Image (cartoon, rainbow, N blue to C red; front, top):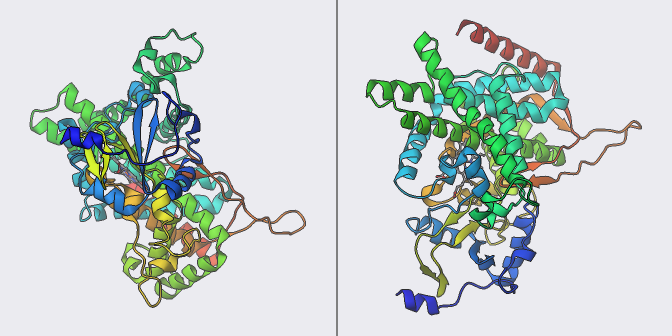
Length: 496
Ligand code: HEM
């Protein structure tokens, strides 16, 4: 079979240079999803590239991604290596772990507590943090971006470590910001991507900036991964630990006599992964939602009408309202479709030679499913560039289009295990912001409306660049509800 397959053509792609392949034409991460989408129009939804001899397959339709990454997930669940991130201390966080026994072990630890039926246990944490978010937005609307980051981080930190974030200066929250800076620093390509041999270069060698960077940064990364688990261990001894993912595991491991340096290391990595997977993605999604409300005032008004009709104005919305708010549901979904937070997904890798539609896919090929193409596919989404929540309402009220789950949350055995949690985190923030605030365009000194420019910065995930926005409570009553909810929350904090 192998010999026959090797005679098959590779999937088509743009003309390449000898030896270096498509290296010179590889686009920057900010524009890569759009550029690949453009190429796919010419070369098709299964397109092959080659970078320095490494095969890369770009899938640009839901059908192709499902056929390979879902239906043949036994072959397509490995990951390519991420040399810089691995050397900085992230080698054993689930998202980078190669497919195999260790992957299965870590995946199970993370998957089970976040199954669909179980994530409702986190609702009270999400509702509390949503009210903290509203309170912060009320008092300091200009700090919006940081408060939304704090919101998503605080939920995850409480779920993972039982840690409650009470200020912007919180040590754990700051550690998260440090990690983000590191990720940002290393998003540029390095010689390590070409070959591990460059690791041996002296730090002064031109282009070898990463040697010194790794030496200095790895201890910081490892400290930030291990410190919160060590804290929970101390709290367990002192009897002050709150119920959390980590405390539960530590208790189980201790009871079963399995608490070893290895099991502690695995637990630190998994808890860190929950944070890494959940905080930034939800933050970016909520910021994208705010940007969409800013640029689509009619949609915002329609959403607020639904909330006013269903929830009234004597309280803020909570999860019990969810089933009665179909339009809000569509807004959350449309935000994710309109600008997927991981526009190229996370790459998979083929562990076997394969054949698809009469074409050859060699073992070791990196596969990217371009979420941008999938969510812009006119066969599935009419007028795909426009933000139109109604598309997801059933016919005849809406267009009856189907949420592109794979494009947003990934595929097969690697599908995002936090998707149900993420869905709740995003929804409760969306509904509360809409209930309490008007997201409005700002005005200049002469009272003229400033038209906002919404642009995105993209590495693996995509975040709107800072944009001008006037966030005002919808009424004095809305401001009062926010303060009341916050006071109740703080009273709970004081007694718990
Ligand atoms: C809006 C929010 C989120 C989006 C859009 C998102 C999206 C994704 C995507 C596209 C992947 C790659 C899937 C693939 O390889 O095919 C992924 C992986 C992952 N996500 Fe999420 N995610 C979100 C929130 C979360 C949350 C809240 C958690 C917390 C539990 C989480 C944990 C993970 C983990 C652990 C992986 C790695 C899975 C693996 O490699 O097996 N994510 N996510």
